[in-house]
View 1 (cartoon, rainbow, N blue to C red):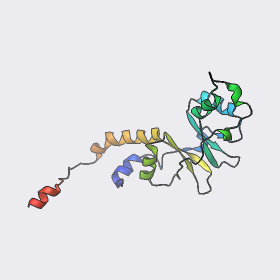
View 2: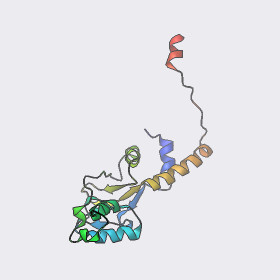
View 3: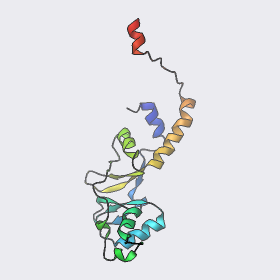
View 4: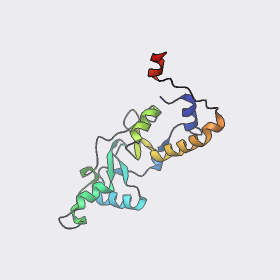
Length: 165
């Protein structure tokens, strides 16, 4: 459990860590795969959310997903992408969170992901929560904690010592 003082320092200056959907690069599942390749190459992100025409989160797509489809026997072949859409290679059943989810749960999920898509109760894409934003808050926390709070080390009594007495 994250203590209230730690949580307050982590969230200082913000309500949550959400980068809103309008500030996040996305593709539609029906877009040509070449479009996703160009977008990912130009924005320099390795993975982005995939949406349907109603802004529901349906998956994620990465440069690696596309590169795997381009692998020929001896070299990469972009002709292999002809006629393919994002839906043909995207990752489905991806972890997502609600921006109102418990911060501790979000932190646990971010250990294995650079970002988490955030959705509302209708699975509408709201934005992303990134490991980078969390780490910026942790950086603030480690620099300000002892300036604001007097920390007192608690004595931990070992079970063995307690039994002897």
